[in-house]
Amino acid sequence: MGRLPVVAIVGRPNVGKSTLFNRLVRQRKAVVEDTPGVTRDRLYARTEVLGKPFLLVDTGGIDLAEKDPLRSQACLQALAAVEEADVLLFVVDGKEGLTPADHEVAEVLRRAGKPFLLVANKLESPKERAEEVYELGLGDFLRISALHGHNIGDLMEALAALLPEVEEGPTEEDLRVAIVGRPNVGKSSLLNAILGEERVIVSEIPGTTRDAIDVGFSYQGQHWVLVDTAGIRRQAQIKAALEY
Image 1: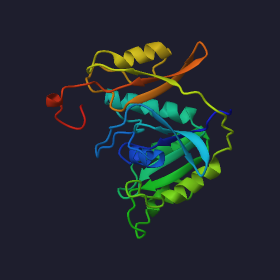
Image 2: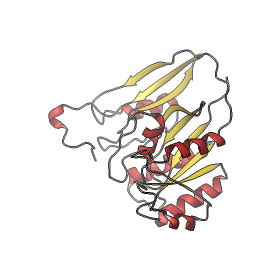
Image 3: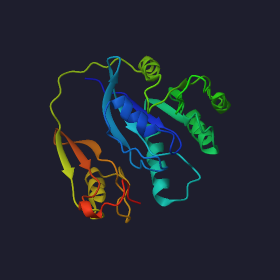
Image 4: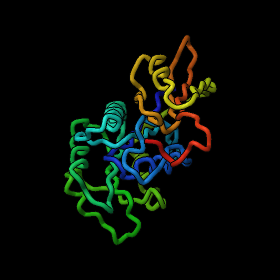
């Protein structure tokens, strides 16, 4: 069985990457909030387009000028996804327009030299042309609304054209182990220690982990999936959808 190709969704914060991720995996797997910096760790899911399977990666925003420690770590996680990916989906906010961070991401893609699709998101009407996106110098782009599903079919066709054929044989069910506990007890540190790498962001700030992060690894011939989880809290203590 061949290795599944990896497709990473990248872009500056708050352009709708997680909404697009959920749309392409056909479930609400990534936390979505109209607040920059919601996604921090790399989030993986197996999916397919037009019969071609692949691993899709949601990432935090790339902003090389970011000074906030957690957002800086999220940026490093996103850059790691760029290195790992076979294909990149570069998402910009077609409604808001370009920012210096968008141009920074464009330069990251140029240096990576990998196949990519440029996607202008949040365009609800055909009248919204987002011609400013051409200023990135990356050529033509796809106009979509991940939230409402506009032109997602066109995106899937374009993505399928970039993906190789992969022969999938029968696979055994992976053993899944969830790491659970209240916030700030070291769940993410334990996962990193098991893997021997800084796979997920670790901070003294409670609520650093927001999504349930699946991480595959092999041990003694058996493939496992470790699941890092957000902290379990009493319902009365939950004041908002997100913790900061």
